[in-house]
Length: 148
Image (cartoon, rainbow, N blue to C red):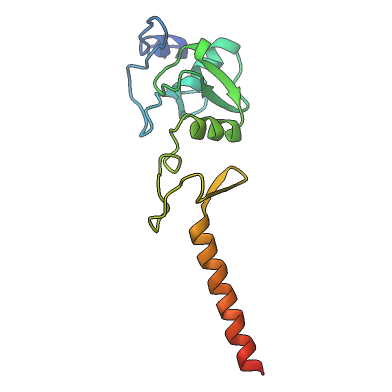
């Protein structure tokens, strides 16, 4: 029986080393991040996490973030460890979050400086908030009329 090929050898055969980003040449998930089977973990693992392991000798405790904003890249100079919240904030700041690209609320009101209210990093439509407030006030008025 042949000895299994070590992870680092399987990994490096799937990387294209270039100036700047080092793209992953093998299978990727729906978001474009490389995947490789890790026998020791009995699981497919994201290629940037495997690169972190190969570079630092331990699995990352947090998420692995890309400074280059290029999902297939595994260049260790472009990778850093960070929280899920930091990853989400980078995603929004760079315009990659699906909701960050929306220019209007679900009812067609524009997300502009006058109509947008931001709380805890989330955008809200002022016109919709006003409509909800008015519906609540209208409901209270009709309840007050019945009780008298």
